[in-house]
Length: 311
Image: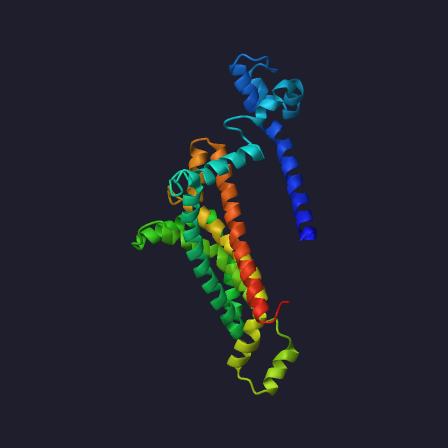
């Protein structure tokens, strides 16, 4: 356990150190603008001159104002402490106050996003597995489906999302749930399909020949050898797919005009100039992705262990 945690904690510590060091140069201009308006002795004195001056020069000439960059209400780059406080204020504090499902609670917004992620993940996984089965079963389908699946991933989701929303509206589908789930599934199906193809083709020739000597039919070979052999590959792909589905759900909330969800929270924070709200929503999304991936990892561990494929 210690061997696993130590590298993770070391990397985390390094990220926090770099983050803290980056706060000063990122926020120095905002700090100096506020100090100048308050009548402070700022070098250079003009706002235009400060914008044209290099960040390094501003830091060296105004060292007394560096600390102020770590305590701004609307910083360009907040400190980890500020993000943690905002995250607690919109999650744990809300729970303690009995306002878990308040529209100011990230738990509420995370639940909205999670629903779209679940349906998108379910749809994308289904399409990906079916596509993989068809590709493995038919060489013709492999030559026709796989290139299109690859090409589909070259289309930017930001450009595709508005089109999906418009088409859904034209088809008479009300609400924002279906377009978000569709966008989510679009990002999810490809890694699942690729991983499942790799898994279904993982049995060796000797294993297939052994089943043939037992007069196993094609269906029996598929169900008793290819499917079990594909599970480790499938779960690896599902972990990637669920994270991609979450990203798709968040991206889908941006052009839909949604007022609920982590993506909507990020958009509203950007519109109203509240960076802390944006950062808190981003961290909430990262935590949610970590929870989903961990659940899949635990499921994989238990299932493969029961099947005798892991000790």
